[in-house]
Length: 250
Length: 68
Image (cartoon, rainbow over all chains, first blue to last red):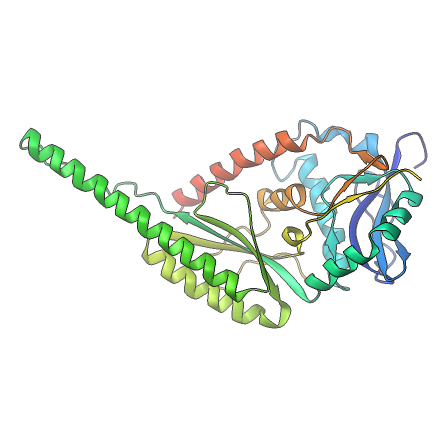
């Protein structure tokens, strides 16, 4: 895979020496082996890519079979394999450096910052917790149509009930958010996706069972208020890998 | 770490491996590199993708609710 469009796809920072065993390949329709580049105590997992070959993603639709989904899973699989061998700090999907020399400058210039972030996520997984209000479909009582005044009164009562219901749901979402924030090693609000709460929490491996039991109790409390709680995970610490690092040409 | 698993029975199970959840993470989070040694991956319009994910997520939420 040589040519004008060859680049170096970067998956994640790892600790030095924590490469993947032979046989792991990276992203792309003709994937190259995943390699580890080391500098000091820091490493980065990379593979050679032909960036032109990944260009069919422009109009990819978001389905399981789309090229985008396939590439994202390849990215995720490398990150997960690395996470089995030590802490990882994933890069955003689609990050390509010019060459090995650029990766070496990345390692040299951001060594201490990356090591600190790796230490923060060491021994922990990310879990997603999401709350959604169950929409009150079919809840509306048949309005009292015996007179104009009683009709308006029953409508008003219904809107008042909806208001109270929303207030209760907001309350329980806030309470669960505080609870999770105090419980987890770290928590990151995720961009709101039309839900009452969308939060990522960082949980120590040793606390995983207790965490899931706890979330189960929260789900039962939420259900009483007409709120659906769902969880995803374990994830590599994607939501806890926030840093913007500069890499200049040498 | 294994593939994402569905949580224990007491937690409302959800498609932990759904492509929307995955893309939401790999596209919107992670360490960002800037500078002239970074080649942008041809064709990935992340802002448009983010918008599309938002639409799909809302749609998924609606379907999830219908099925309960």
